[in-house]
Length: 319
Image (cartoon, rainbow, N blue to C red; front, side, top):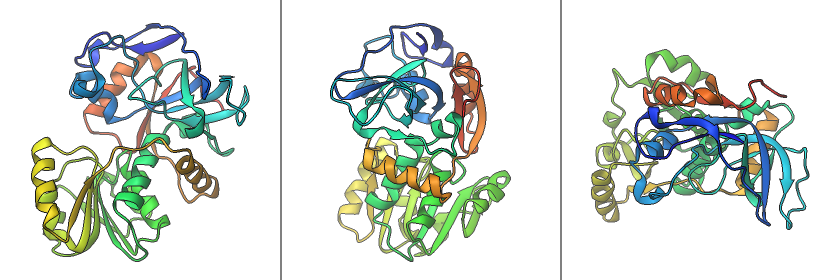
């Protein structure tokens, strides 16, 4: 199969497009013919080597966390899916999606809602799972809560704004650049702050939950903006911020937590239901063919994307 891969850590130039072995599904996995994938910040963090304590030194590596395609084969224990089914989800581990074929754990995969294209479906799994688990599980969002999403126009933030409303937030504030303000409002934000001009940490005792979807703030700086018993959730803080915040959080009514998205089939089913009903919609900024993944990485690293960056694997959009 053709795939994007790299055989050493480095800048986007280390990415190659070429032949790699087609994976074989294990008993509880499905093999997916990938029609679309996507780019997430974790992909270029893995590629650069900043996560090599987790990802190790074995090569080659195929990046990518989001898969949308059709089932090509199923493992011996799989009965829920059949060849030809339209499915989406995340591979286990930290990569494997940016290829013509990928394996998914059957228990964590889901059927693509009929109204979604493969491109749209590929924009969903990691971003939506991260947003849902950050707000519901770590943030323990309650009906009527005041919620702030930092990075509200990003791949996770666009889902977080919508999910905060779906989970019953009383007020959702989105933080983004001025050119994305209308997008964030269209997703359901009640207030939008221009991060160039307004500092949300100065909103003293306003928020029940602060979710930093882009890990650009810190718990200590954000703490004054939390109400009593408020919750600060982040995705990948700087180690020094994590250590200091965790220590202070222990002795405060305002708590800090960090999230790494779990690959859960029950959550994918819930997300699928929201997509089917129109409660949730993916936002796609730009699409690249798989062979141009290096350019897509550069675009993502520049921080310009509003929503998700999608890769088309077979060169066309297939409904």
